[in-house]
Length: 293
Image (cartoon, rainbow, N blue to C red; front, side, top):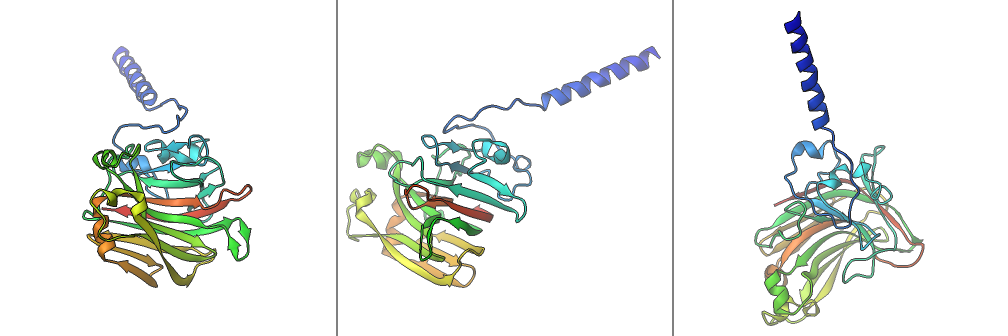
């Protein structure tokens, strides 16, 4: 009996240790938190969207950003709840934004995901030669403005990034390069804007400067209104292809996409409201979002 009692006591000690070792205290999020560590499939849980390679920027703070691995538990982070939350009725993640804090070189606020190929770091990005694909199913649920004059929202982007050497070469204080692609929801239609060179004979140094590029606009004919729709962006070599709901496609493969190869890039997706007017707002729902390289 004494032996059995000792075995039982040791068993209780082991069980207690296991339970306590798997319990962690919750901590407050600092702005722009950057945590290291590998994130596994299990840690992503049953989330609608795989967030292991995304951080989110909010329209508050400096602005406030939440990176992996904290973002994987977004449903339970108080600072995120007004801006990024799950709607279990239609299995979507809602991105809500209103005028507030802005990022460098912008006048507008956002609740927007930024791709991080290396979770917790902005320093690992991809080139057009390496390529990548972003696919999503989404809808604009609510937006401020009058009928026919609704506020515009950027729902997807490919943003450029300077290397440290490029940044120093043109005497910039940050690594921001222009977005080569911006996809707008604009009064129920989808507008694609991509960057083209003002002068195709631009020098190797000047090509790195924002002022060497300008926007070229293209409209999809399909009207999406407030209905769910699918968007995909595929980059491979000098080709950039944007597809709307398997119905329409814009493909760019020319001198402009070829010369964009000097930049690194990253994908963005979410709700980037294009107004700073008081009382304006937007709500975007994402049902699917996947990135591949």
